[in-house]
Amino acid sequence: MPHSRLTGSRIRERRLVLGQKQAALAKEVGISAAYLNLIEHNRRRVGDSLLEALAKALKTDPAVLAEGAEAALLGALSEADKRLPQAQAELDRSEDFAGRFPGWASLVMAQNQRIQDLEQMVEALSDRLTHDPELAASLHEVISAVTAIRSTAAILSGGGEVDQEWQDRFLRNMRDEGMRLSSAAQGLVEFLDAGSSEEVVPIGPSEELATFLDASDHFFPDLEAPSAWKGSARDQAIGAVIAESAALTSREAQDMARQFLRQYVEDAEAMPMQAFQAARATLGWDPAALAREFRQSLPAVMRRIAFLPPTSDGTVAGLISCDGAGALVVRKAVSGFALPRFGAACPYWPLFQALAQPERPIRAVVRQPGGARRRHVCQAICVQQDALSFDRPPVYEAYMLIRELDDALDGEAMSHAAPIEVGSTCRVCPRSDCAARREATILSAG
Amino acid sequence: MTRQVLVIEDEPNIAEAISFILSRDGWSVSTHASGTTAVQAVRDAKPDVLILDVMLPGKSGYDILQDLRSADDTRALPVLMLTARGQKTDRELAERLGVNRFMTKPFSNSEMLTNLRELVGG
Image 1 (cartoon, each protein chain N blue to C red):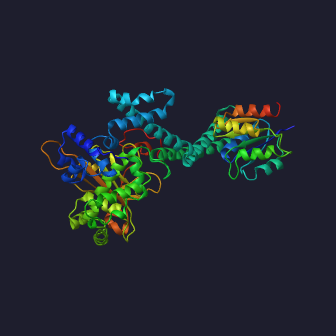
Image 2 (image 1 turned 120 degrees about the vertical axis):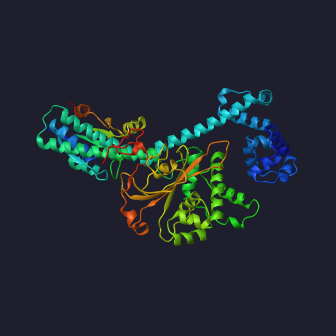
Image 3 (image 1 turned 60 degrees about the vertical axis):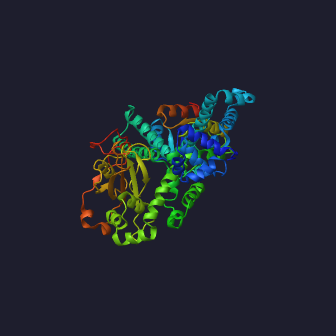
C-alpha cells in the first residue's frame, strides 16, 4: 500500500478524535509509546502489518490512514463506477462529491465492498452446487431411487394385472430403493451440513480460518520455537505463516488467524513441544497431570494435546471449544466423530455438560449413530474466559478433547463403561426418543 | 408382429419396472446395463426402438447416441433418452445429437408408453 508522508499525522488525528492516549494505543498494537510518537510526527515509516494493526485499533481503514480519507474515497468511487458503468456516474466530479458529501461517499464505498463480498459468496455457492462431484453423485442416487419407486408403485397401484411373484419382487425392489433413498438423503444432508471436500471454496472469514487450520491440521512447526524470538520476531513469524496461506484472503480471516496463532505461540512458549511430548509419553492421556506438570490451565493443555502431532501411541485427538452461548469456536475434527459445520451441536456432548458446571472436569465415553459406531472418550472443562470483575458477569468458555477409545490406553473400567449416545446435530441425527431434540430429523432410525 | 425394444439402463430396479410395463403392453423387451458395449448390444438385438439412459458405466448415453447416428445401420433407430438431468442444455445436447424423444427421471409410466408407441408409428 502506498504511504504518503502524512500517514503519521493522520494516525495522530484519528487517535485524538477517538480520545485515545498515545501510550494506550502503542500498547494495543505492541509497540512503544516513543516509537508511536515518532510515527505520529512522520519521522518513522509505518510497515503494512503495523498500519493494519493501527487501523484496526483506530476503527478505520488502513487506506484512510495511508492515503487520506479523500484519496481512499476517490479510489472506492472509481472502483464502484467500474463495477456498474451503466449507472453513468459523473466520474469527473467524484472529487467534488467526496469533498462535499464525505458521508454519502463513504456509504457508496461500504456498499460497493458489501456487493463485492456478496457476489463472491454467491459465486462460491453456485460453483459448489454446480460442480461438486459428491453432490452430483448424491443427487443422482436420489433421483434413481425415486424413479424406481415411482415406476414400481405405479405398476402396483395402476389396476393392471400383476401376478403374486411379480408383486413380491416389486415390493422387495421398493423396500431396497427406499433404503437406498434414505442413505442417499443422509449423504446429501451430511454434504450440505459438513461441506464435501477440501476443494470447497471457503465462504466468509470463519470458513477461511477453518480451511487454513484444517490445511495444517492445527500444527505450525514454524511457531514452535518462540523462546528464541526477540522484539517483534513473534509477530513477524505469525505474519509469515498467515502470508503463506492461500485460504486467508479476507482481512477479517487474517485477524482471526492472528488471534488464534498468538494463543498457539503462548501455549508453545509455556509447553515447548519436545518437553510436552516427553511428558505425554510418561503421563499418558491425563490432561490434569500434564496441567500440573507444566502449571498450565486444562484448556491450554488440551490445545497442546490436540494440535501437536501424535506421540508414539499414535492416537490422534480432536478438540472443540464453545463460548458461553454454546457456539462452537474451535473445531479440530477426529475420525469417526462428526461435527456440524453450521448450526448447533448435540446438547448431550460432554462439552455442554461442562458448560453447565464451570471448573468441574468431566470425562465420558460417547457414541454417535451411524457408520462404525465407534466409541470416543471426551474430556471437557469449562473455565472463566476473562479476569474476575465486580463490574460485569463472568464470561465462560468450554473445551472438549476427543479421541477414540483405546482399550489398552484407557483400561478396563473405561472400556466397559456404557457409552452416552450422542449425535452431531439434530438434522442428521436419527434418534427418535431424544429429549433434547430441537428440530426434526430427515433421517429414519436404523 | 411383436415390436422389439432394447432398454439400456444400469439401474436394475428401473430396468425391471420398464421391462414389466412394456412386456405387459405387448412389447418384446431386452435389457443391457453397460455403456461400453451398448452399441454392439443394439446391433445384436436389432430393436425397433431404443430406450437409452444417459449416465451409464463406461460410456455416456450421449456418446452412444453419437455412435449410433454416425453408423449406417443404426442411424435411423428411434431413440428415447432418459436422464436424471433435465436442464435445457442437456435437452439441447441430446437434440443436437439426434434424439427422438427426451424424458427426465422420474417419469410417468403412461407417458413413456405413449412416447414409445408414437416412435414406432402406433
